[in-house]
Amino acid sequence: MPLTLAVPAAVVAGLALLAAFPPYGLWPLAPVGVALLAAAAHRRRLRAGAGLGFLAGVALFAPLLEWTNLHTGWLPWALLSLLQAGYLALLGAATAWVSPLADRWRVLWAPLTGVLWVGQEALRDRTPFGGFPWGRLAFSQDTSPLLRLAALGGAPLVTFAVALAGGILLTLAWRDWRRPAGQWRPIAGLAAAGALLLAAGPAVPAGVRGAGDTVTVAIVQGNVPRLGLDFNAQRQAVLNNHVDATLKLAERVAAGAQQRPDLVVWPENSSDIDPLRNPAAGYRISQAADAIGAPILVGAVLLGPGPGEVRNAGLLWRPGSGADLGQVYTKRHPVPFAEYVPLRSVARRVSAEVDRVRSDFVPGQRPGVLDAGAATLGDVICFEVAYDGIVRDTVTGGAQLLVVQTNNATFDVAEARQQLAMVRLRAVEHGRAALMSSTVGVSGFVTPDGRVDGATGFNTAEVVVRQMRLGDGRTPATTVGMWPEVALAAVAVAALAGAAVARRRREATPG
Image 1: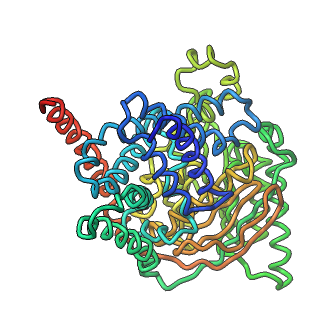
Image 2 (image 1 turned 180 degrees about the vertical axis):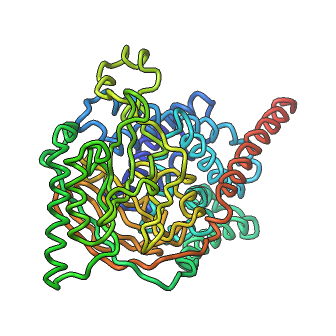
C-alpha cells in the first residue's frame, strides 16, 4: 500500500475501532479496523510500521479516553492516550516484522493478526504499574455474536476471534482474483472459517449449572450533588442520598408495593466517611439496614492501616448488628496516579496535580468473596472489572453472583457504558449473573448470557430491584484461566522468531 494511502488507512483503522466501542456500539467495525491497520503496516520498515500503529492508537485512544479529561485537565488524558497508543505502535512494528511469513504463506495472515493482537493486549494489560486493559477488542463485542466465546476462553479468545476476522477480511481483499480457481481454495476456506466463527458464538451455551435458588437484589444509585472531582467534598450528602433512597425503598416494602430484597448493593464511594471510625456515619448506615431488613454492601473508604493510608472497600453491613468485619473486601488494584501516586517526587515534576491524591490507597490481598447470607458475592471495585484474574479469583473462590461497585461521578456516560460492556463479558465468561452499582449511573443487572436488565440513566437517583439466579459451576473459561492467553501470546512470540529466521534467509539469498 502506498504511504499516501497507508497513513489515512491507519487513522481510519483507529476510528473504526473506536466506533466499535460503547457508546457507539458498531461492533462489526472492529474487524474492519484490524484489517486496515494490518494492511497499512504490511511490508513496512519497522519504524514506519510503528508510526502507523501509533497513528491508529491515537485515533482510537484519544477519543475513547476523553472522559479522563473532563475534570482532571488535558495532561493526564494526553499522557494516558499516548501511552496506550504506544502499544499499538509495537503492534504495527510487529505486523511489519512478520510480513515475510504472510508473503510466503498468505493463509497464515489471519491467525498471525489474531495472535499479535492478543500478545499486544497481554503486554498492555500488565505494564506499567499493573497495566490498563481499557480498549481491549473483546470489550467492543458486548452485543456481538462473538461475545459467547468468552465462556470458552475469556476476553483473550474474543480478542483473537475479532482480530482473526479482521485478518480474514484482509486476506480476502488481497486475493489475486486472476489466479486459477484451484489456487484460491485456501482463501475460500478462510471465508468459510469466518462464517463459522460468527455462527460459533451463539452456539456456545450460556451460563453454568445453577444452585437452583434465586435472590432478590436491590441496586441503590443515590447520585451526587455535583459531578466532578469534588464529589469527595460532598461525602456527607452522597452518604445521605444512599441512606434516604434505601429508607424510601423500605417504605415501599412495608406498604407491600415491593418485595423485600435479600441484599442491597450501594456503589463505590457511597460512604467516603469511614463508618467504622465515624459513629454518625455508622449510625446512618445502620438506620438504612435496619429499615430494609437486609444486609447492605457499602462502598466505603476506610482509614489506615497506616498513617496517610486509606482503603477502597466493599463492606457488608447487617441489620441489627452493623458492620461485619469478617466480610470486607479491599480493592486489590488501586488506580495509579488516581488512588495512589507511584514515584510521587518524579510525577510532581510533570504536574503538581498529583498532590490532589493526598492519601495513598493500600491494595488488598484477598479476592472479594463475601458471604452475604442469601448468596456468596464476587465483589470487584470499579476498573478491576477490566482485569481477568481479579474477576476469576472471586468465582474460583466460590462466588455465586458477580458484583461491580463503581463511582462514575468523575467521568461521563460513555465511560459508564464502556464499563458495563466489561460486566457483560464477565457474566458470560464465568456463567454468573452480574450487576453494576454506580453512584450516578449507569447501573444495571446482567444475565449469564450477557443481556442487560434494569439499566439506569446517567446522573440520576434510582433504585432497581430484580431477582437473580445463583450459579455454582464453572465455565471452560473459568477452568482454564489464563492459559488461552498464554498459548496465543506464545504463538505470537514464535511468529516473531519465525519472521526473524525468514528475514535472514531472504537476506542470504543471492539476488
